[in-house]
Length: 249
Image (cartoon, rainbow, N blue to C red):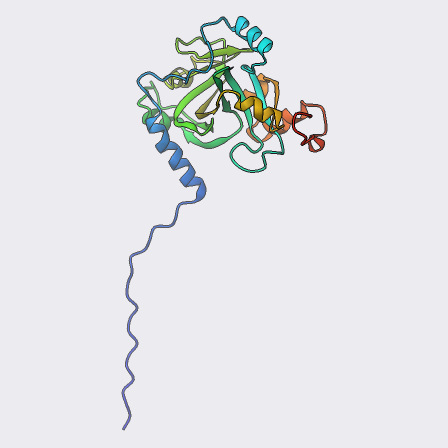
């Protein structure tokens, strides 16, 4: 007597899971989501300097007292890990209350102009073409947008002006930019970097940062992937022989 072989069972059908998003797609998605909350009723930059002073007077005061508003910071090899590795930061304000700056060489993603304007409820006459780079300005208030731009364009919420560079903490300026009626050059950043009183000075003493003259072309024209290298070259010495002895570069 022979036993009947059981016929093999058909495999169960399982619902197909959607393919996981790539890292790039996730990054772009998060960037779009974050700018939903960028448009405040009246955006203001945290106070860290007396912005009522004329620009020329403010620069003179900053130079005399050792403040760095209007300059750039270049991170040194001592910052080996983290968000400020190979960072270039434009200092918007610096006084006895601390310092505020925005990173100018970190792009989160490039997003379609139309999507950005829709998320911010900014009207436009025709569908704008192309993309806008969304820059990471720093970890503080990372959901708020700022426009770093050339100072020939005047805006009533302009925060500070140094060396023909200004910052406006109001994303409505994007409407003027997309209509080609805004500043000649600009970058859109989310968030900013900040230091408590004396903190930035202490980090410079530890050779974590080197202050340099702000370079307009480096900020607005140079490719982001080369900005740090260009800033380092402007120092004029062998970077990797930079002294790690505190206070002696």
